[in-house]
Amino acid sequence: MEKGAVRWILDIIKTVVVAILCSMILVLVFALIVKATDIGETGISYVNQGIKIVSILVGTLVGFKRGGRGGWLKGLISGLLYAITSFLVFSLISGSLSVKNLTWLDFVTGAAVGVICGIIAVNVKKDSKIA
Image 1 (cartoon, helix red, strand yellow):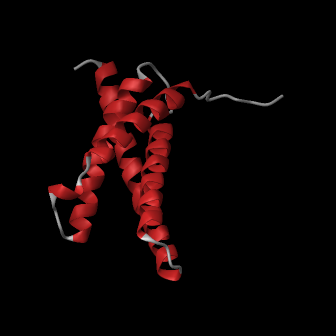
Image 2: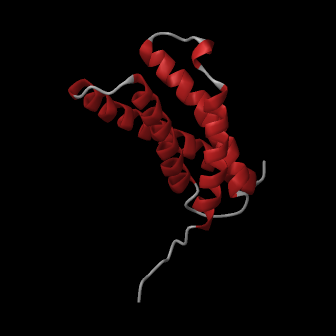
């Protein structure tokens, strides 16, 4: 395997792992907030989507910090893998591995946010010194 291909794969794996860890932290914080307040089901679903978006953004910024090319494709793959991995991780944590809980919205959100964040992440300047 070429060095560039290995780097791509490692960037994607790093992105997914960071995004999952970020999701877990944000879900724990949100669970404490839900316990202390009275948030309705609609609010919870919106916040869950927000957590997914923020997690993918953080994951791509960390995973793609070396820059490079193809941020949209790496982001797309990372977003889709994040959707699958987060479903598996949170299903195992909850103890109910049911495919009916995995929706097309998770894949669309993961793919779209992954593409956008991937483009942003590879184009963020590393040396942005203010004179």
